[in-house]
Image (cartoon, rainbow, N blue to C red; front, side, top):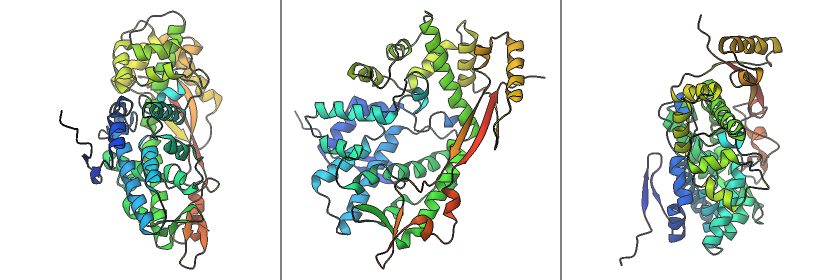
Length: 409
């Protein structure tokens, strides 16, 4: 039998050709756990606002791996020692960093799975893959968890300028058409260096970092926290919560076997075991979409109406302001929906609700971005920046929203 060619190329619309560096990486990409990411939308329901935003976690993971390959090459050129095993660990860790995302990326974390984040599930997937691949992912897991002694390696995976952010800003900008997010990630990577085991950006990269942080802030307000994307995701969360509540009461709902498991079981951090992981690995966006297509005709008004709203993009109205909404505003909309559709207060709460959104482009207290001057001096980017007041970007901005049905006059 002819051996399989495992040194393949992916043609990526952002970076051009992405190479698979070795057979282990190829086998991980070929694994069903990773192939599932082809069916997980990178930006959830943002395509309700930006029709082009249908790219997947699969795209993103490969892009992150490509940027990590570039970062390793640049750092080695600058005499930072990275062994072959460490290189492999970095590539595997960034490739698998999002493997634990559920359908539509974040909705399940806030609806039918309790206190289990996608990072937790990513780690569980990596540990299971490590068993399958006979310990070949052990070092990658240590790097991913931040336990490996070389601190800068974890910063490349999870930091304020990591390969994850470097890819998703550029990729999401491309697919949404929002030009403000188009950062030159590859150029920024050429400015990286390592001093005292910490990742730093060389002095000539100050303005590129400013652009990166500004782009991140703008992308959050214009794209990730766009009010239509916000209400679409909140509706999806409520669809799943309602479905789970009905199933608990004995209602039989049509759904895939994998989704049915999560509707009938209460998984949390302690009970999310290998069996749950296997079921989770069968879940993707299509399970949720096909379920809602069925549920929009269900006799339960709340479930059917919420499902119909998402399927037909007939979403709730959203208002956003800088101060919390007063109870009388909430009660007014609640009373109106209760009267129109003869709902209980609990049922009405699925259609009228408030919340808060926050945007912080740069967190001074979390793995600061350090700038390396030619003199050898190392300074936080906030102090190094002179053209832009990054102190403003480092302060969290919180806004408040209310969602309610569009009432016909």
